[in-house]
Amino acid sequence: MKVRHIKQQLNCELQEMKLLEMEPPEYDTLEYSPAPSGSIAHQREKEAARLRREGLTLEEVAKRLGVSRFVAGLASRRGDPGVAVRRSPKTNARRKVIAEMRSAGHTYTEIAKVLGVCKQSVAFHAAEMRAQQQREKIQ
Image (cartoon, rainbow, N blue to C red; front, side, top):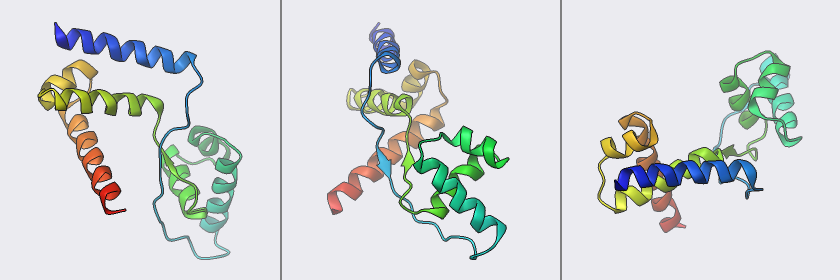
């Protein structure tokens, strides 16, 4: 019964996120080495970073540059280290549910069933949240 309630709550939160103006997602800055200056890869990185600064999504950048979404994200971060990694509101909502359910004593398997994801995804997000907490303690 409680798991069903949490799943309904998550669905409501996800629907609200689509309807309401949300705060920007959290940003984590990662550092990457740029490609050699003057190379085609370097030009692509600069263009990807410029497009991201203009507000285009990774999908839109990938389509314009004719590359995959992954390559577009990597290129934009290499082209401008200030371009941050963004988590979607859906990911933030999942992490919130994971944190709440873990603090309530639920297992990764139980959480995965509620969220409709695999157990490894829950473990990944839990580990990322622990690492983020550790980074915040150090700062």
